[in-house]
Image (cartoon, rainbow, N blue to C red; front, top):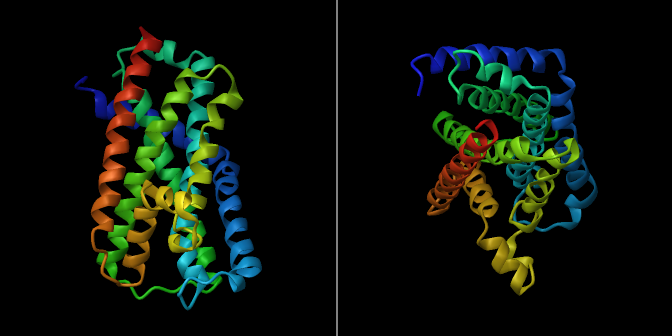
Length: 253
């Protein structure tokens, strides 16, 4: 790793954040779909869904937050794809710049943009009646899980961003990730699902992450869910990082 890695990453991060500041519509677009989904499920379907919770928006919010992240990381793949096509990477290769700084700048930009979108979604949820008695440590734990989840999905997004042949292909990978919360405990309890669907729902990462966040918000015992959630996030992050860096090395070699 270059001794100038942090300085180079900081400069390139500033470049990416300026692009975001000039195009705030990307953050707005990222937040609109989860907010629309939250409005629809709370006010249209919420009365018919039995969750055992006093407020359906309280039950729903953790899953909506994950959908917000899954929507946002599509823009990371898009921005990487545009930089690859625009020759930015080749230009930086001719400069004394740390190789991985370009990728880390995109990843950190994704983290900042997604955190802003998450704050917007939480504010709308508060207007819709979301309430939590959780203290500061619980909120920090939720923030930590969401940061890890964002980093994990962002490094997944790096792979199609570097290797896709078309702009549509670069962002299309996010669709299955957005759909995954629907096959989890995000919208309804898993015990209401038929056998095979229930088995899948109870053993995929979104369910444990949603359950852990929900328990933290309601000050309930998190049990093993938080450790399973962290294991999923860290495991996906490590695997995606290794695959992304290998893809990057092949593209610039």
